[in-house]
Image (cartoon, rainbow, N blue to C red; front, side, top):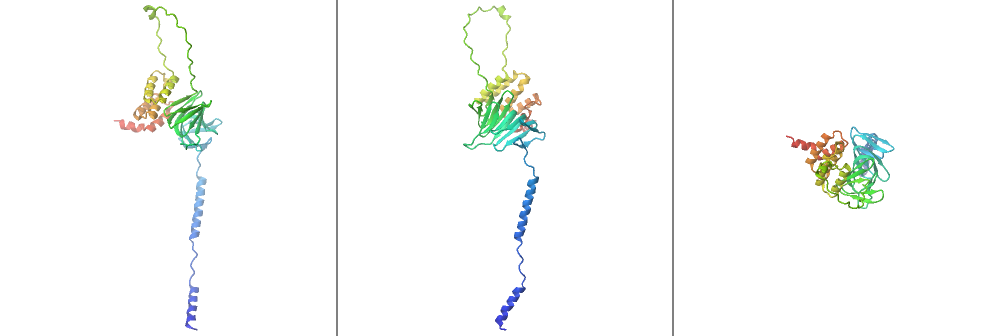
Length: 316
């Protein structure tokens, strides 16, 4: 056999005896890993509890003592604190005591109680978020405000941003920062008709005048004080409003003094932003009105102002 043929035959025999390379297993490994990850994700989503929803509103935050139930009137919070979220409209409300709230097609309605609302800012041209109350609708483009709905009316106080109140007749009333708007609006007092001046009578003698008892001036009612407070807030005369509230509280009985004391604390906290005065006032308020109707809102204001830290810094 020629040498060249023998060399080619030997090379082919060596190639036939050489071990073949193993099939690469890397693609199989990655496929198994992807399948295991998909299975783990499915099990996690299956066992992870979803966000609790009540009456179409998400329960974003809740205290341990929260008592909430649903009925035909809406969502009723009987005790504790909660943050309810209408994610589609960007509305978050935090209760300040017991309340009833309901999600409707056109907005969120506060049926009864007091709550602080926060609304995400709207883009230019976007429709406003709507908070419904008994007197009309509060149209919001992004802001923070407090609403109180009572049986015979209510009030809204603006803390940040700008809102407009649309009454049932269709009229729109703008509300500025620090202003409180109440509904229904007080009826204007018609002017008294002019009367003919009586003929001057002779002055009584000193002895007769001494027998006429003097009539003390009547202290203004709470509604009168709140109306005057609204005027001062609208003018941004916050310091004068605080002094007016302090003076008016001294003339009111204890049963109506709590509302004015709360308004004074809110004024010092959110409009004047005077933390030392506000913390001192809230301390006196809690001491005088233990377990009052605004206790939870007072605690929230104290946390916002960091009153406990200030008390530690000023204590000897």
